[in-house]
Every structure is written in C-alpha cells, then in structure tokens.
Length: 397
Image (cartoon, rainbow, N blue to C red; front, top):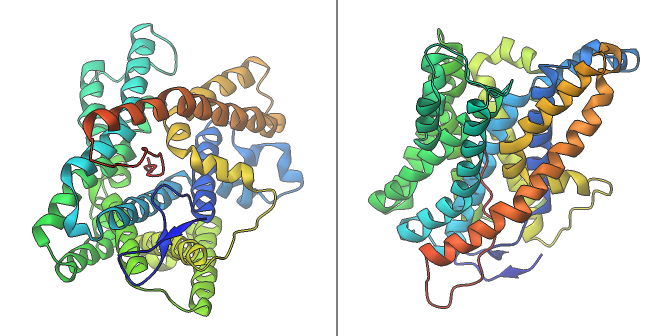
C-alpha cells in the first residue's frame, strides 16, 4: 500500500487506499449480519450441523448481528475521521461543503433506490415487503427512512419489514455525521473536542441501560450507536498523533481479538458480569483491531491471510450488501420452504444465500453506487486540482 507524507509525525496511507485488515473485519461483520437474518428464519442449531458442532456455537453464529452493527459503527468513525484528517490536516479545518457532498454522494443513491423499490413492492402487496402494522404507513416509513429517524419510528410503532428495518443504523450514523463537522468547527481545538468525544464514548453503558422498557428503542437508540462512532473517531485521532512501537501494536491486536472473540462467542457470560458494560468491551476491542491494522500497514507489514480474500471483498461491498441482503435472504427462505423446509438440511441454504448476497451487492456497487457517487461528487464539489473521486469512504450501515 502506498503512503504519503502525513501532516502529523507519522506517515499514513494515501486517501483512497484500502486497508486489507479493516476490510477483513468489516467483511466479518457483514457476514454476521447476514447469518443473523438467516438464523431468525432457518436456525443453524436445528440443522444437522449439531452432529459435528456444539449448539451454543451455532447459536452464536446466528445471533451476533446487533453486535456486528456496532463493529461497523466503530470502523465508520475511524475511517471517515481518518480520511478527514488526511484530507484537511485536522478536524477543525473540515470543509463543510466537501464533507457533506462526499457523504451525500456515497449514501443517497443507494438509499433512494432501495426506498423506491421497497415502496413499489409494498404497493404491489408482495409478501415480506408489505407494511402491515395498523399504526404504520408507507408515506410515514418513507419519511422516516429519508429523514434519518427510522430507528425512532420503529421504537414508537414496532418493527417494519426486514428490508426497511436495516435502515435503522443508517439513521444513527448519518445524524452523527450531520452534526460532527459542525462540532469540530465550533470547538476549534483537539483538546476541547476529545473530552466531549470521550464522554460520549464512555456513556454507552448508561445510555443503553437507561432505555430498558422499550426493547426496540433500546436496541436502536441514537446515543449508544453514536458512542460507538465516537470511539472510532477517537481512534482516528490517536492514530494520527502517535506511532507506537511494534510490541504495542501486536499486544493491541491480541487484546482486540480476544475481547471481540469473547463477546461474539460468549456474550452471555460477559453480560452476566458486566451488564451493559459489555458493549464497551465490544467496541473497544473492535477499535484495538482497527488500530492494529492501521499501524501495521503504516509500518509496512502486509496482511497475509491466504484464503480470506473473499471475506475482504465482502468488506469492500459492505454498504451495498447491507442495504440489499434481505432480498436474497427472503428469496432463499421462500425457496427453502417451498422445497419442504427440512430443518436438518437448513444449513445447506446458507451457501446460496451468501452467494446471492455478495452478487447483488457487487451488481449494485458496479452499476449504481460507484457511478452515481462519482457523478454526484463532480456535480456537488469541484475544487481546483481535485483528485479523481474514490469509494474508499464506505459507510457502516
């Protein structure tokens, strides 16, 4: 990976380059999301895999989707803030027009296309896509999705159909990024900004616990998700200011892998001991892995994990896959049930589901998101001598 001189003391990757380790982590997160939505309909613990794998492991493979979204939040905060630091030198020098133009160009084309398709499917009465709750309506769902409060709307009215429901995380992320550059410009100094970010980050256990009584809103409220994004932003500031010795980087990697593995494989035990504090273990462990990947790349260490290129490709397509994967999930579940719905063979249907999810994401990226992003960036922001637009700033939905 090429590097360029940094504005800080460290050399950092050029804007637009990709970090294979971070792509790998993001790929793992999106696969866990897909496994979660498949597992709600075809549980692995009821398949013949229980003959060779313990039921608890199969259950954990199916029920880490929520945790995976918080991994996405951390990565998003880290990457978008890191790109801003490399582009403008410091967060207090963010160009508002350029920042918002980039976020708009990246987010809006796929979002508008998804809302349009879902609206047509609802109007056609297609099963799995029709809004049925008496206190919900198509116009209100559209307004919530485009108005970045679909999470709040679900908290007030109940779950929407699966393809609408995935937009809850996008509401949190984009509200954060609407306000984030303004806060950076108002605070003006890193020593003022960092304490506010740290306060938001460390508030996660309390803001999460305070929402008990409304399961949907507790899961999808703004503040816990924004806390995870803030952790990623703090990580980007740390990476910009410090290059630790190799042994510290290695220790961070092992700490992150251990913590993330503990949450994903035995989150129940951590919950028993830490209650809502286990969310901090999840997000801080994710940040340790992201920092390890960043600093290893800065030091010239190549990530060599033969056989995992497919997972990195999932990470590169994570936004497109996240928005569209429910189309593949619903199609495969329908086929599974039409074929007889034998639970013992349910695990076999995960293979075509994963393939369809990746293929649909690749098609959307190739023919919709990348062309639209480039065109919108040219239209919305035309600085003199600007480099060709890239798609490196992938959001975490």
